[in-house]
Amino acid sequence: MEENGIRINKFLSEAGVCSRREADRQVELGNITIDGKVAETGARVLPGQTVLFQGKKVSKEEEMILIAFHKPVGIVCTAEKREKNNVIDYINYPKRIYPVGRLDKDSEGLLLLTNNGDIVNKMMRSGNMHEKEYIVTVNRPVTDAFVHGLANGVPLVELNTTTRKCRVEQIGKRQLRIVLTQGLNRQIRRMCEYFGYRVQKLVRVRVMNIELGDLEPGQYRDVTPEEYKRLMQLIASSSNQPVRATGKPRDERNRKFGQRGTGRKNNTDSDWNPDKNATHRTGTYRTDGGNRKENGVTRPGKISKHGTFTVVNKNIDRERTHGRQKETD
Image (cartoon, rainbow, N blue to C red):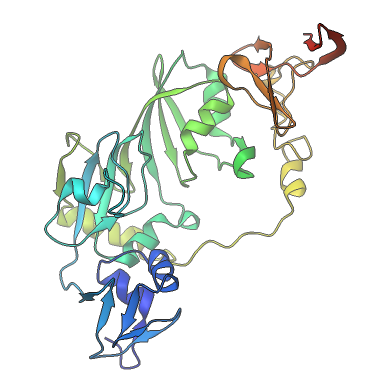
């Protein structure tokens, strides 16, 4: 340990307790003490001091642990004991570890777990542009236009962002290979839903240079020395600091997609231009059975199809028929 100590969040991450971000949260909750005193954000741990996490002594692990696990569907990527299907209890590893990033409960595939917080930060920070590869099965045949759309950035209004361009390859009638360099909440599912597709199965098969291989759901293995060496080379110049926002106003970011304030991409490809009478607006979207939401109210909607995309028709005839609005094509 450094003579002037190390920050409490780094101490906890290196001890395999949690990531630095989670450590900051635990400090704010008052769950960390240093020599019997509740730690404050930014506190430093000096040589010889005793750190307790929720009343239990924390000591730094000398051996670095990194395992590859095939997470089954239904297991949640958290160490929280109140979640009965948490990944830590499921694996029941003999030493303290925690997940490197997340994988949706409804998804399966490669999840790395470690006791080293710096590796977590460097691997998972979006700004470091590290790759994660997925095999995705959708509910209907894949088209060239769908592949093109996914690859070139998808506006996700609910997250107030547009996805980065990514590599997309059709590998089956209803199957895709997608390589991302970011990890937004339920990103691939949201991207597919934007074009009227529903993900039926999602398997992560690679994180950077580490592959799922033939691991069966529920199985794990140690990362090999060769994999670890290559991983260290890949993250050598990576930042472990959070990505800072660019500060661009939302409307300015959205203008490049052709429609101010909607985030909808304006693509000149004929496969990408829905009928001009069928448009998308912020706050209006498809729901079950073709219903739509407008001004917070769910109303029955008529679904029109154009090419390979399903869109919601928004032209509403204001004529009242039996007290209800009548929708027209």
